[in-house]
Image (cartoon, rainbow, N blue to C red; front, top):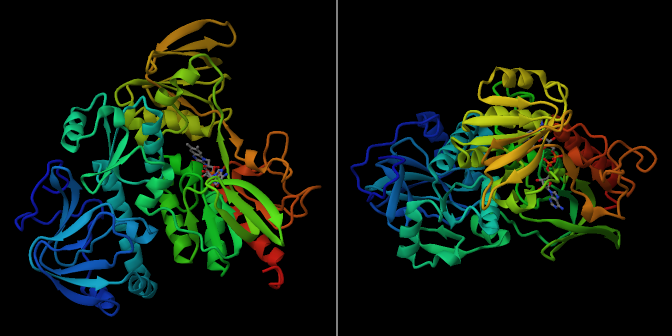
Length: 551
Ligand SMILES: Cc1cc2nc3c(=O)[nH]c(=O)nc-3n(C[C@H](O)[C@H](O)[C@H](O)COP(=O)(O)OP(=O)(O)OC[C@H]3O[C@@H](n4cnc5c(N)ncnc54)[C@H](O)[C@@H]3O)c2cc1C
């Protein structure tokens, strides 16, 4: 039935899927009447497809009569995901993010649909913001459901392979629904490899449209497949934003909404560090908290709506000023020109320098605790290192999945560097054991982590603790190595702004180059402050561009 894991033929006897978590709402007669003004009514015969996995820039379809099945293509046939009847609409977040569709819609019987081109949908939701909100909420809920059931791509590979991990990380960080099948452990893997004639040593592979196999694709190839990479227009932009975390996304929204030509680059995905947080509880306006991924998706859709372009992956490798213009060279050799630059490259995590880390890092050490990592250590004991909010959040989150969580902090007081509410939650959680004045001194295991040595700093006493995953959340270093010698940095590598080298709050020592968010020296490492700085940076870009003589 709907969301079934088996492959089922698409026949007309599948009942409509019930509305789950607001994912499948029914439009009112008034909402359909509004959309009718922007679309065309069409008869579609049974078994015809309305859109297919891999399609891009699809129309928005409302079912007016009959039923439409949404399916996943697999090498064994079609897997039913949902069935929609009159008043329901099709599609998912990909329609708004510009990504390719990862599911296929097939008429179960002769149906009538309202076919609304994307531009028409934009006009309709401008007239009725409530309709826009309903569609966006439904699309976000669908994406969550699809992530949960592993709809979309299949990734076959070993958990010990660095490339498998790279592919999974890239796809997960971009919040693309997929299913990872471990060739070491999942029985399903052997059957799929045999059916598709793939030798196990040729993994990792990515399978799309059921049977199309990509062998160890690069992130750029995956981005092309998934529709993440918009080709930069080639013209000179008003502003290029480097980094699509909260600071970069805010800069993109404000710049594009104020009429600037803007392109946003990110080496990995939108959302930055924030998108690796399972729940941000202190961001203004979200009393129940918001997942970092949802915040990033909403912001990206908003920025795109105002006309901002995104290039992902797009890793900035160098920056220079030539012929009155800032030229950014990307790691893949592409070049972009802009009158102004907002640096919002954030920071990367600090690693532990202990025996065993290098050998076990790829298989068992994590620098974020999201659903993806939690799935890997279900029912196992895990260790979290760090005394700040990230470590605290990770310990609380993992305690719901792991059998036991060991939280290792170097000092004595849990609430010294951690918000009080988190410290209280940890103290109340029976599954979390806090190791005070301690550090992880060694990692042990052959192919995967089996235990860690925890050393007490005051007595040098060592204890072995069984653990299958180590979460290291001990702060970050700025992502500025590519800027060395070009922009003034502080002694830790963060970008200096204001003061003797820059005249204003976010101005660097170089005219037209601004820094916002965690990458900036002295910044407050919070989502809200990064967003605020992104907005302020755009104001400064306007002042710099002035009357237009620099454009
Ligand atoms: C697990 C976790 C939980 C957190 N929870 C909270 C919370 O609850 N509340 C809160 O306020 N804060 C929280 N934070 C902190 C918050 O997420 C950060 O302060 C915020 O994300 C900083 O935003 P930013 O845009 O400055 O940088 P980042 O979020 O670090 O984003 C920088 C982006 O730049 C990209 N990039 C780097 N180098 C390049 C390059 N050369 N070219 C192109 N792109 C590049 C990166 O890929 C990244 O996407 C949390 C952080 C983590 C890790």
